[in-house]
Image: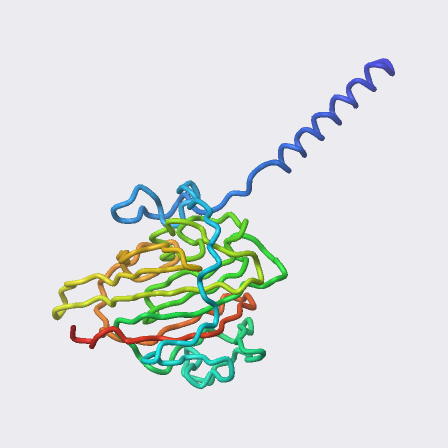
Length: 272
């Protein structure tokens, strides 16, 4: 092989390598799963990465942050004390409190309300970390979990592709939000959640749990039913009847999330 042929061969190999690297660089990251069961009534799998992404909506500026709670509300967190919360194992809540908010101390554990609630209207405000670390489900992850069964996802969904039923405001693993109304990392955002618990007549389910979720003043779900309890990579069921009241959990998912201005209003009695 002469010198010219050798140089041509080397150059061709280099070009192929550069092209392969470019293709790899431009390759979109894979999100979601293809081996999970289908969600009942839908054509999508649990955490299906091919499910259509909710369209992005820029929230208006009229929704109010840190507005006073209604007169008949129960203040769950006033910016000064977590006395109304405990850890999931009943010990004192391990999150820190400063500057009017509480911040997840990763590894300290999920916290829950000491009081139990039935149907309710819940307001809370949260901020995902200003410093962006991680991607998809590893970025600004937490959750609001009713009765330790039904989860409304909290996530940094600002320019952060992930499977749609795991985006901010999703009924995790079940229903993706109608739209993506997320604000940039570090900004304070609001959730207003109207929750109606499931009802049984003995062992017979007579009413599924349902929820309305408003994120930054934008409706994501309206009286949307949970298909069952929230599970990762699995379909939840209503096989295990539970009381019509329970605590509300805020999840420690190893991200330093912040929460503030948390209040709740009871909606009727447990037997209604």
